[in-house]
Length: 426
Image (cartoon, rainbow, N blue to C red; front, side, top):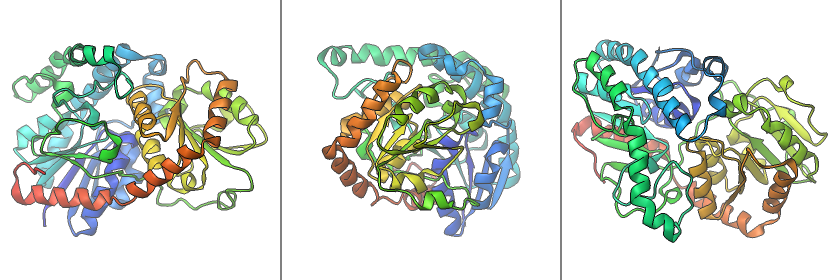
């Protein structure tokens, strides 16, 4: 049986979507190894044959200590920082560790997340067939694709359509400025320089698994033939999580609003919880807020608000009437798959683009988390609670998306790659 090695940056938003596929491969009798940061061991190790801790402990608390100002960065400043100080730094620190793992494990197929930049180094040094997993297929460069990374609405207005070639060029130029840094890392492994390192060095020529449904993406004239949409790939429930009594009792007589801004944003954007509590206290609804961190650091919540550090999306979202979230992939896919309309408060990274995709689908509305007041946030939630057509649209779309089995679909495609050792095309 083929042996698979997954390698992912140690962030739950990138690790968790790969876990249904890793588990499906293991259930199908394969030897499945996983290399990522030690902070992800609890989530990953029980599902795979072997777990290899590589690189630093990149928990949210550690990130806050290493990069205290990252939460205030926006736009190109944040992009440049993320590439040079986070993604490429991880690549430099773990490339040799992953090569050592591959040397001892002797895998048949490598599987890398699209932001795990040791991918090209390890794949080129070992000569093994490899696949890319991505939760942001919008970044893939295909012809006249809608520019990704600016949170632009779709369909675009005339001035955006006219400016699209320039916008795409500017975005690629902003990323290309980091070629020299990554090529210096490649040189240390005796590899030649590559162009467009940030956007393309972790994209496999053999197989790309898009871990979202194609219905979520904007239409394109053509996706590359090796790109396969396997559907929502969700994993969020700790192996030892027991549903508490208060959660079993929900929902009650009133609507339930579930609010989360994810683990990382909760660490950096604690001030937002003050606005959220002000909005929630005026709602005729029960509200559950997860903080991802220490709830004692927050102001006292209103009487109708329950604050928890963590509740699995898969447990609480089905009970909710409306989900308020930041537009992270796991929250976005969770709300979509369970058929729940959303109020999206996108802070950074892929979140504005995800928010626009929900608006296009008619299953969500968006507010600016930096400028919105508590009263405006309450009005947005109240509006979505009352929009029956949006609820019906979300329910219908959720029923459609629940037909996917992303874990098994991804596993079957990886098995094809293991056999053919050649590009897996649609």
